[in-house]
Length: 582
Image 1 (cartoon, rainbow, N blue to C red):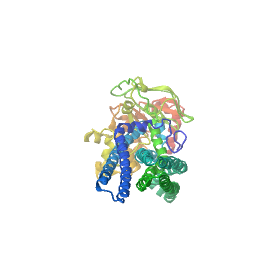
Image 2 (image 1 turned 180 degrees about the vertical axis):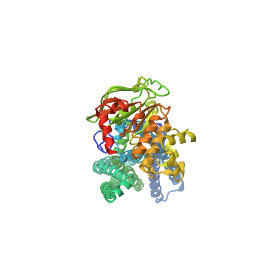
Image 3 (image 1 turned 135 degrees about the vertical axis):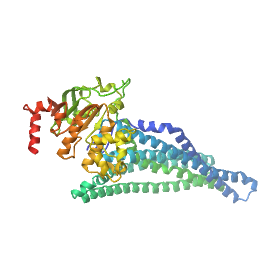
Image 4 (image 1 turned 180 degrees about the horizontal axis):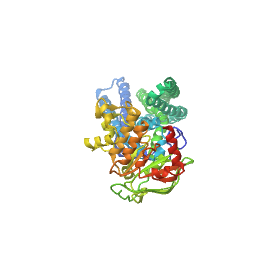
């Protein structure tokens, strides 16, 4: 299934990294503290090496102890401070990064949940999992393995150049050139050379996530059709491609590391040679050698950071793209949704999916508290009609009114609370049966649970389950039959008891007799809100207040069941076909 924008593997939308920065910004002070502590730790390391080099070389000349006391204290001080500052840097950096990731992951979830149905539909399950896990962790790597080390490296490398220049200017210039090569040229080479490998790694990791999820979630169906080995082999091939892509990145990293060590050795030799040529004594030469070594070494991680940046940047941008995908438009001054059953009205509603028309000029009014059935052939637009009423899909033209006001006048969350029900892709979560039902109303009591289960004919299923309400089911309803899963989902929808209840094929997966009995119960139940029920079974629709017939996105017939079967038309054709099947 293709995704938004350029790439078919996920959401790509403009918006850059503003959304990511929005999650990181509240923790910027902690990150700044970590960066300063890291830079200070590197400076202490540089000072430790320079002071130790001076101390050892000077001690070899056997001066009085008083001449060495300051250097001895400096070595001890730098050593103690380096360890302490490194601890502070790790603690503050990881604390800030983990806090930011917790907030960012919540924002990504909210963005996916609050986006339009069209946006969610274009994300495969593996894609969504990648956004929530791997891509968010990429932002953590961006902070901890790219930004903070880069800041510390630049500070320490610059300080090393200053120290060497203080000993000898020409040696300082040599070290400065080496720092530029190791800290600028090599990272650019690493980023360019590793760019393709990073892109391949990101794409192959996403492909592996999708393939693995297919194997796990479709295990039962794959076993039935004898396709388990084929799909497992597909996942194995994806893992192999990911491994090869990662190996190419490792080869680039190894080559850049070897070049960095070569630059480091050359810079140390050149700095010492330049210093000795300028008349620097043995003590100064020792300081130059070790300071140049540390200065170049401090910027060598920039090459790895640059390569890692190329690897994590696509994931971070995908997170930013998810956060930039517009959710439902915010309403500046939303009005409150009226209480109780609500009237639903569609005025010339036109909905498009891609290039095809799903609804065309639909005019429909459902009075408050009425029970209306929607029928039609597959692809007639029945599910789209319910989605339009729930505000899940936008109308290209026309308007959907709820309680006499356009949906746009209400806050999106209020619309979702007022129009709820059962969709064809409704999900059963891993957990107990009770927990799955309580998603609709967390404060529901035992009597309300029992009543909803009875209306959905799910009570007898609960009695047969080994642990009753506390029976644990797997994600997607694993452990339940198709009919049991459907009744659980229906019971959850009924427990919500919204002002407008929309049910899309509530009796699907049941045998015809049970399906008709359940549909009749739903239509005849006293009280409750306005009901819109989509079904392909017509036998029980005599209990509906009105039947609406859709054909190719248009309303072609309306009326009572008895009236519609008495006249030629699409409804009677469907009725006669059902009788023949019986």
